[in-house]
Image 1 (cartoon, rainbow, N blue to C red):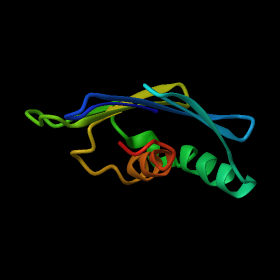
Image 2: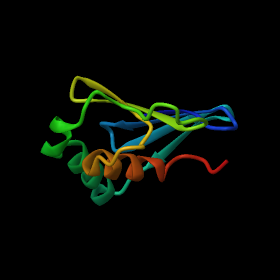
Image 3: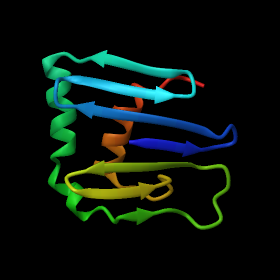
Length: 104
């Protein structure tokens, strides 16, 4: 997941890796987080949610200023959202991955 935009112009990346770690990058550098087996399974389950199949590739609100843009790549797809429309499966995934982002 790549998060960009906002008033401060952030650029963060979160990558769930197959070795059970999450790698985050931002302007301050990169950090690797070791996951418990349960947390790794939880994230993989969110990524495998069949409801993600129904999420549109692009869901952004027109005229929304200073919004964060979320670009997610999973299962051979690329999805972009600013979270102005509710997508429960995608929102749950973004919320879970966002826990690894640095607080600005």
